[in-house]
Image (tube, rainbow, N blue to C red; front, side, top):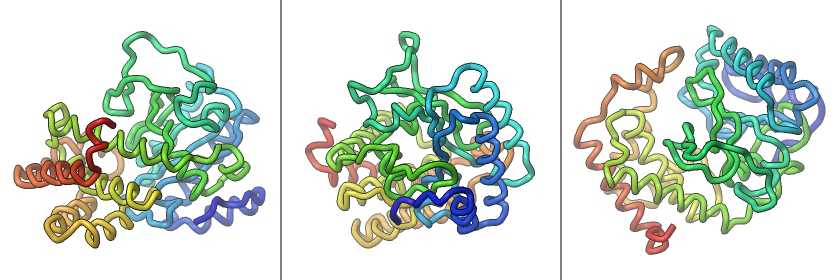
Length: 311
């Protein structure tokens, strides 16, 4: 899908009308209009990315967005956005509890993450990223709303080449110019290197025991994540979970088909709506599923090849 052309309010509403699920459209309209109201002239553009922008969103997807601002947000704007997101979270529609996205300064999102000439952000020594499994600071943390949350945190979760590529190539414009006008082209080598680093880093935490697959949703996420990683490295594209599922079943051999299919099936069992993060804690995978998932992670590292060890 090419980047969406900006056609003003009428075009925005046309694209919004193409999104499935009437309750989701209602929530997105409320979110977009609330962001416009809070940020005013500081808002450059508002975009939908992720599975719904890729045309593969379903009833179990979260809703990924990025708002681009002229300047980063001060404490007053952050407080106003927190109040707004709290109100949205309290709406009756289940989709309102599954928004996930970031507020990205235009000067930062234009350039690759961590670019030498990109703006910096002052953080205390030892700062850890709450949105990237406690990861260390690398570039510039955006104000980030995690799936299921009502409060923004500073995180580099969306300050990635992957998100930039998705916005440029597939993002749906709900306000502002096309994302391609705001983001420099993503170099294929940089995209592949980032995907490889993320895959190896996550694998290392799993195989070392630093990250434990004791939550059903994390165990189910992992096979689909590595299907997307391997397909991305094979094709140079970032794909949706359903497309990666189909690719994995076709390309990775029958040995892994039951694990991949089970991971997809279990998405329908994950809690949705208010209190979902806490309710996830009560759901655990079987020991057999964990062992098979870790075996698949080792297989994925072997598939990536010798470069994985130095990524």
